[in-house]
Length: 336
Image (cartoon, rainbow, N blue to C red):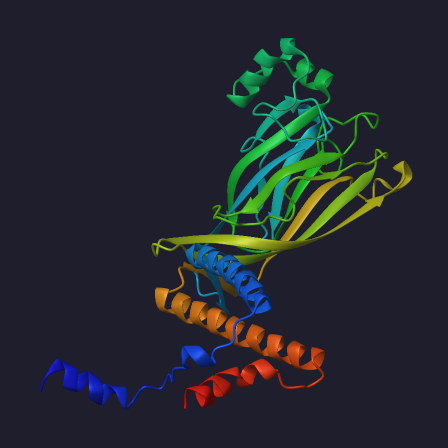
């Protein structure tokens, strides 16, 4: 059977009837509308292709099945008090108390609302050598810390994976100590540059990052109630990262010096571990889905615009038939 014979057989199943050129009617309005539609379709196609190239994210929720016993806490914040006057502790529900003042780095700084530099905000160059010593963990002149008036606390710790309370308080207030911080020095105005749990992953949003709290009182407590959600992150290459994200509610309360024995001024991060975990997966949309969406957009746009054009034209002409439509018939009769 020849190829021509097969083509004739296939013509029987042609589902796309053709219109004779003499029976087609063209207009300047239709041509202008076609150009506008073509530009619009190009715009939609480019947008759809850009969306196809983007990484998509899918979220799944399940009961936390991990058996990790430790929780990494990352912090970087500046308090408007000298470093020697500050103490950092963690109390957890297991009854364990961790004294973190030596585990973290406390670096003298000058408080500012803007983001901290590598060694804190330094306005006086003569302090830079002492600040570098403090950042390296070496002994430094404590008088420099008192003169600068602020302290940058940063580092990462490993705590028990249970509910706990991280305290930032002043020496002699809230804990037994032979020393006592002068009330005139106490000021828990602070700027948080980073506070997170676990490793960082792309698009992670930490609610406390780049936040500032300012107080005019020497006796004020800032409390952050944090719900930590264990998170498993799969990137597009199926690499796995076990980390955490969190939500936070904050409050603050000022009190008088007479109430100080019953209330402790400071910054308190009280966190709890949620039993529900989140699984985040990155993926690319398939090319087949892209083609289906593209065909739907193009075909739907052409049909919709054509319908609107015919409807508007029908309403504009008052439902009257266009005599030009019968021109092909008159031409055919003249030929006969």
